[in-house]
Length: 91
Image (spheres, rainbow, N blue to C red):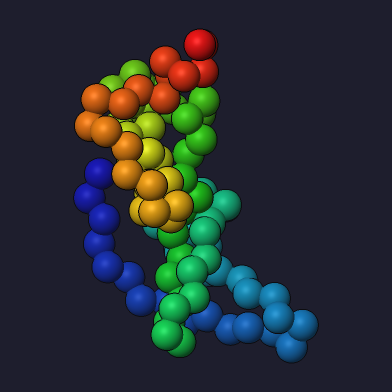
């Protein structure tokens, strides 16, 4: 899939409601997004798929690896390279 950069002007209503134009929703490919605020900048990204939503085995394995990496960064935990969380689930 090829993504091109698109700049969209958004208007925030008095009640704080933020609406994305249809072309922005089409570019995102979803109606569920993750909004990040940092240093006065807003980033809108499609909500990552849950593991059970990913049908392709390879894609699911890669998503699981990304989750483990992000979890380690957020919790400041470093696991051994050969650690397999699935082994602990079934012990």
